[in-house]
Length: 127
Picture: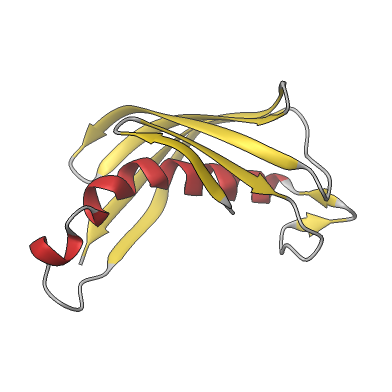
């Protein structure tokens, strides 16, 4: 649910995503709330994935895989949903990290309009 990483830093990521009609989360011409949360999760994973993907082959056994999932949605406020053809921009900021679990705040925009504000925790691990 991310097309382009517009900016990435150690503790911040900004992504964009164009809503297409054939997207699984489009209903009646609009991107659903579930799709917005998935977009946020994938934007947040860009931050946590940086550490894992850097020199992955040099530090992990062949056949290793990365698993990750949302462990907690601490807050989510959905103000509006975009329609097919819109491009949304999401900005995620790392709040804290303890081992494989991190807490990240994310805001999604359509132009200047805030669509979603959320704080989630992710678990990321190489197995």
